[in-house]
Length: 304
Image (cartoon, rainbow, N blue to C red):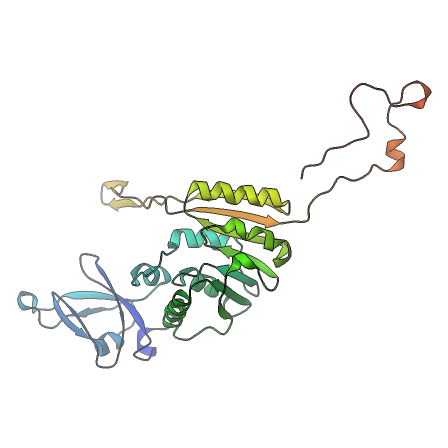
């Protein structure tokens, strides 16, 4: 994102951090003003300095000398964690894993379902870098409208390679995609549609809150027969405190938020008949008949 001084007011989002590391996310506006217990700072003052600078409050009683705030451009993590939540979000630690395990890259055609507030959509669009296409299915009109607003506010525009359709993915999918990302209560209802809707070699990534949902999803993936390399994992993030001689884990931790299930679309492996030359070398009993030892040597088993 651009430097603060190059961004027009009304579009630029910044993070202000005080000495106690408390963060405030604000959108700079004409004649706007940021106020806190320490006083106020006019938005045009913030807009005039580059990212990483310090600005000082005016007023604030006993702190009239001015309280410092560090100004930074908003990051993806800042934005997602500070927006007013009206739907459950996918936390950045999980979003990062979904992008990597899903091998999200430019020029791909990607389907997402369960948009919520659009946090995952924004991460995918950043990875696409203005190329490819992201199609989002969302069942609720209010969530579709809300996510459009959050996405356009973050980027400062509505990405041309993104479309949101209000529809039920459980009833079917239009088109063929390179990647499919799901954040749904019953993602196993989608797997039958992926036989034709996901390219062979394509990746399926599903974000699932509970272990019972995980079992249902993995069972459905295995049963359909056209997925391989199935993985299930969760991410625990433990921060560390490093200050002088104090080097230890923090007293808090980013614990379980959800499970991530990934799988890769494949062509089912089928048993093949043995070539004639190979079949002629099999052991035979008297009269040229197969030996009856309870083991038919003319059969091979193949992993499915």
